Image (cartoon, rainbow, N blue to C red):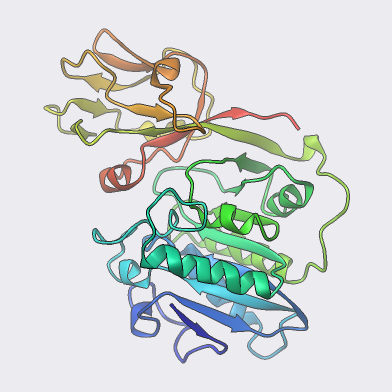
Length: 333
């Protein structure tokens, strides 16, 4: 990892595919502002999620001719994957699973993120923002790893919709949650101007925030959900959205279910002669709870109880590299 205290030439106009020419390795850039406690921003932890890069470029262009109201530290993650428009390269770990608290064995990438965390702890980081996109149809929402007032205040600046999660482990926001209020922003599909503008406006608000309100967020002001399961497809199962010879043929419009409460009995796809479930649902303790949510009935994969999915995607490569979706339930403050 490189650390620098200036903006390299061309950074503010670089496309995700060409950024590697300027920043060939993960890079942490520190910029000085009036308030020394920095706002930390991470972008491109996944190379196919460029909204964070565009939002940061927009923010820094705004302050080209004037002083930043607060110091900013920006981590540019997987620029080599961004070069090819991929979440990660096949030889790489997921850059949002390598942070302190990860379940992955120690490797150069985990040592790198530990260095980032140690650096920002020493700088007395003010708040942390990690910017992502979804590959499926999702509204914009913020994620938190602690149900602390300051975390919810920060998340509510982005919008009403907030998701609390504790798995997967090794994510950036959870590592920084030990240091300061931290959020993950999910800004819809890549390259949507609305997502870029929404992320930029949020960053600009945070940059000009002197502190967080002391009072709690009012329950009527947010819609809060808790992730209760991560749903994966085992490597041994063949799946598709169009190949009928697969073990599991998923519905072509599955991602339209995101953030909609699905009643028990909703069909997700059809199975080809399988007697056991072709998917794996894991709770916060990594326990298999597939039978609590899914069943095979008359050759169809159905959910057995009311649930709200998020991050359902039609991108088969992303499903293999990460997961099919998460299941959520409403959480009362």
